[in-house]
Image (cartoon, rainbow, N blue to C red):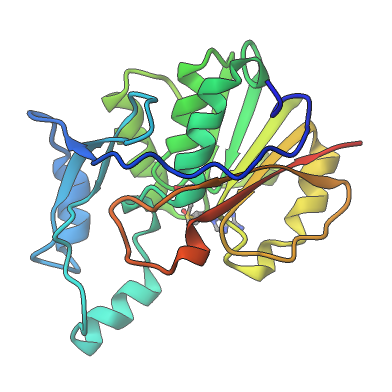
Amino acid sequence: MEWCSCQSEKYTSMPNLNSQIIPGAHSAVLTDVVQSILPTARIEPFRLNNNTGIDLFLMSEDYPRGRLPQEVALALMEQPFYWAFCWASGLVLSEYIFQNPELVKGKRVVDFGCGSGVVAIAAAKAGAREVIACDMDPLAILAAQENAKLNNVELVMSDDFESIEGEVDIIIVADVLYDRENLPWLARFNERAKDVLVADSRVKNFDFPPYQQIGRREGCTMPDLDESMEFRDVRIYRAIT
Ligand SMILES: C[S@@+](CC[C@H](N)C(=O)[O-])C[C@H]1O[C@@H](n2cnc3c(N)ncnc32)[C@H](O)[C@@H]1O
């Protein structure tokens, strides 16, 4: 496949599939967390719309939109529920990993900025030897654990990238560059592992050698945040040394 030989692929647009709610599954702990700030919001189990068969506890599609009371808006700024969405890059990368399982098969993988754990779960399902899901947000760690259980996979959790010991074969990073303060991490990842895969829907003039663009696909955050098309344009980069 072209992706793995690091050729840039043609832009691939997303098939028009609807997400599907999985009956029976429920996460009381994630529901309680969300409702402590947004009492009318719900967490529901969704099947991703990208043929990976991954199920995730995510914010329900009828989540409160529009103007929120100031104290709620402030609480959300303080504690954004990133983990309650599957971001466009996570959606795209999970499918990419399924299509190219040799990237992770038998390997020790770190998913940096795991959020819901979507990429970590994809790597585990694709045959990784060990997957470490890393996020600085303790609620993301909780969500990734809940989602790992939902998908019957094992993840090792870490809230501190620098405390991960031992050799890491590949670091995978989906949609963490929205915070430009994370850009210096790109160099650190390249020092830490032989292989680094980054997907991003935010930084458009991405010029960080030795990263090279190897793919470009359309992906939409689940549930849909009604963002502009620009944020559905996911580019995939690999550190090529
Ligand atoms: C937009 S979400 C993406 C989540 C997931 N990768 C996906 O694609 O659905 C970004 C996640 O990265 C985490 N994050 C951002 N900066 C981080 C850092 N410096 N160290 C660890 N986690 C970070 C956030 O807490 C959040 O969970």
